[in-house]
Length: 467
Image (tube, rainbow, N blue to C red; front, side, top):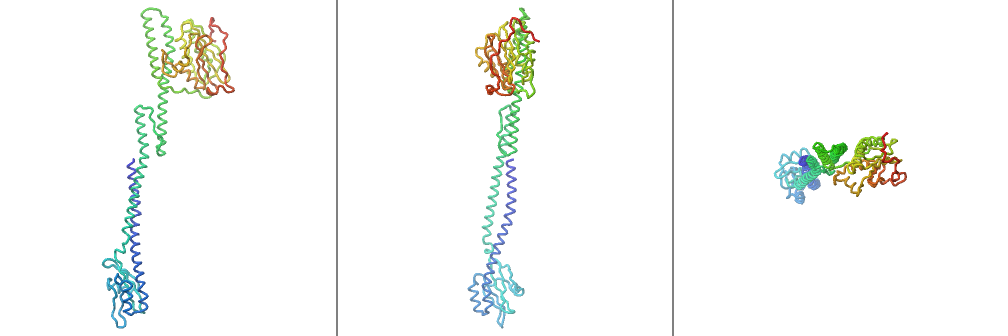
């Protein structure tokens, strides 16, 4: 493209220079010729008054000599009063040309050796006509023409060189962004997802760079969403795996039971490996739009119905409260169910059998709080646990459960906190914001006041059944 622009500009500029320089050179040559003959006419006009005053040949010879007969002027006098025709000065024009001027009575030019002559008729009387001849050499007719042509050629060459240089710079300005766009496309095709193109150059290439960068960002986002989806789906597999592990633990002894427990443990390790591998990139979960969401109370009742069966098998006392009335929150039903399964699954995995747990739902004016509590040993370092939820798993945990819950709450402008529960163990508080305000706005007027949830009336000695 760069050399194509240079060639086009070179051809166009050359045609323009030729179109203007050639006619201008011819005009300069014609102007030099006209200037030479104008000077010859002035010299001939200087002799005409003397011829009209006197016809004395001696006086005329002195006039011609003073006017420059030696430099190319001559006067041709006709025969009159018995006197023969007389030529004063050096004669260069042919006799027929001189006689033709006398007959026509008007000035004429004729070519001679080394140049041209101007023949100017001058009336001496009623019938006698003298002819003044002025010699114009070729050098005088071309005086300054060569210099003018050289200047025109130099200017034309400078225009061509300048246009080529400008075209080359413009070509570089256009080609360089295009090359960067090609390089960025190759890098993206090779799997370098961080490849981006500078948004510079002409408008069209700049728009192409913007579109390329937007496409690359979208590709990265889609891949991240795909990895996150794989991680979420894999984490949801841990819920039935927990059931399998608990059921396998109750099989007793024997080779078959041991093989079943070994297979379940291996399957759980494979699922954990998939989760850790897929969690390389985590896009933020989009909050549900206006008018969308789910009934948190209904979802809690449904999930507790599932986990209550496992709780009875392990002798765990459980409690649920705040689900008597509908509680709308701006999150998807499946996402809330996955978050509850993640937290309740952690209770079953990381606490001993017989450990009690509870789920409480508090509905405020602009926020909904879901508390998942247990009576276990608690978490020694809540901040480290949340940090593990944001990074790679450790200590036998993928950390994705808390990460799923955190992203779900932050999508509504809420957050997640880990503390000590009234049961003596861990309490995970999920804050769902209903008005879309972020955590920094919660201390303002009208926000839900943070408080410790009141102790519910239900007791652990008598598990509360679902409606």
